[in-house]
Structure formats: structure tokens, C-alpha cells
Length: 242
Image 1: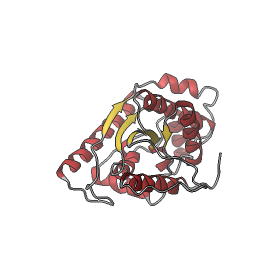
Image 2: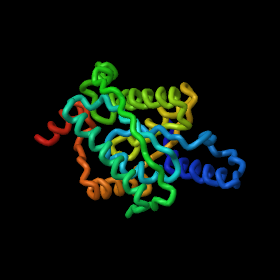
Image 3: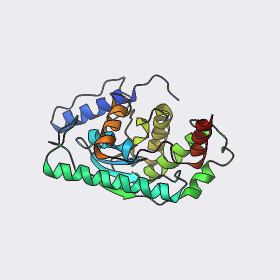
Image 4: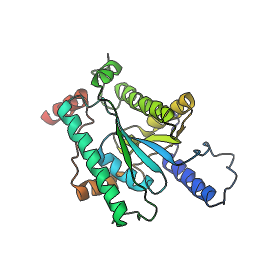
């Protein structure tokens, strides 16, 4: 894994060069620029939940045609899964309504904001259990989580290739509890495997996580206190008892 790389700045560079290219002011990429540019603006955005996606969608919808892909087999309780996916759909409806009204109070205007679509993936907790096998007691943030990242990002890359999206990425990097370096490392490997541009990110930067909390309050979003898997829930409960 590459340490010390600023993925938030990488994303800003990419968006800036996309904007210049669209306006006919394309510049040669500098030799130290590690990424090319996506061929277009159709983005498949893997989302873990509505609160985490709130800021990410607010920011990216001014630059990309976003389709949210809700695929989270790590949520191992059916009721919890349904609650989270319905909140995701409700938030997207709110954003789309605001775009239609050309009114949005926040960090970004809606002058260029685009409508957002959603694809709900299959609910496959058995796939998560298979990925987590023999790592059930691994602390949160370790190898079990890395396998979970790969499971969700791989499904996103597969769908992005199948549906011919120009690029893909994930909201997971907004969480202070998620390893942004590892997520970007996995995304870059999947880019090579599936031939779809991976958009680098560290959405927690530039007050992104703080903004997600503000938006959660604004829209009255359900904010869970664990990632979704039974192992994470158990670890939080055990810590709470101490």
C-alpha cells in the first residue's frame, strides 16, 4: 500500500482537468500525474449508507452523472439492511427534488448538479460470511475489513464494466474508521482487471466527514453506530459493556 499519498488532491486534479478539457482548455498531463482521465462522466458510485453518501453525492453530482450502487452484503441483519437501503433511496429522492427546484442550501450550488439514479444490488450476506471465514475474531479495521472492501468494490467494478460506466468509486473513504489507502489500492487493482477507470478519493478530507454529519442532521438520516456486520456489532457491544 502506498502511504502518504493525498487521494483527495488526486481527485481534485482529475476533476479540474476534466473541466478544462470540456471547455477546450486541455493541458498536457504532468509527468508526476499518476492517473489518466476517465473517458466520460458516467460514474458508478458504490454507497455503504445514506449518511456517508450525503456529502459525496453533494460534491460529485456537479461533475458526474451518478448512479449509486447499493451493494452491502456485510449488513448481516435483514431489518438493518432494509432500513439503510430505504434511507439511501429517500436521500436520493430529496437530492433529485432539490435539483429540479434549482434550490440547494449547502457548500455547493445546483447550477450544474445532475439527477442521481440508484441500482440496488442483491442482498448476499452469505458472500460476506464466505469472505470473512476464519477472520471472525479479527479486530475491526483489519484483514476481515479488507476482504469486505474487496468484495464490495469488485462487484462494483464488475457492474461498471458490464454497464459501460466511465468510472467507479466508493463512499467508504469518508469514514474515519475506514482505511482510505487500502480502499484506493484495491480500486486501482480492480481498474487494471476490469478496464474501468477508478476515481481515487479520500472523502473525509476537506471537512467531508463533518459535512456528512451536517447533512445527516439536515435530512434526519438514520446514522448507524457500526459498519453493519455481526462481528462489528459484537465488538461495539463488548466495548460498551466495559
